[in-house]
Image (spheres, rainbow, N blue to C red):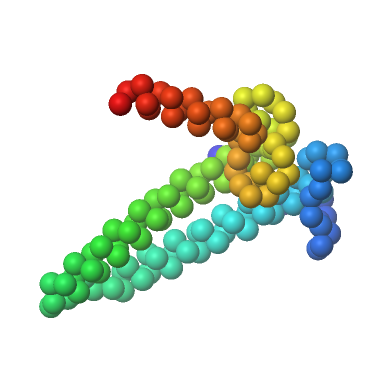
Amino acid sequence: MAVAETSSTILPPDYAPSEDEDFMNPVMTEYFRQKLLNWRQELISGSSETIQSMQEDNLQKPDLTDRASAETDHALELRTRDRERKLISKINEALEKIETGDYGFCEETGEPISIKRLEARPVATLSLEAQERHERKERTQRDLRE
């Protein structure tokens, strides 16, 4: 699903969201929308550079050590790009939530996610407390299986 990339809200150049203002007011929402769009663009640009670099790099090196090193580098780069592809998907989901008005609210409790958490992780879907509960539950289930 395509996400609209234009907004009628103007973002002041020195704007920073604060806990003192109405949560997810139009300016704050636009701030996070632009933050997500810029992050996605950076990831896409990096991916394009990787593809170009890998196409230009010749893995058929005469020295076995050089070839093994190049193949290891390629495998690491591909794993990194796969993680970034998943992150782009999460960014797109966050942008869709902005469009529907659901962005910034915990999926578990419906409460606002703190501004600090959204600044640190704009794709967060759980409040810090809900995330900690989720991680404790995962650890407990993993420990029971072991």
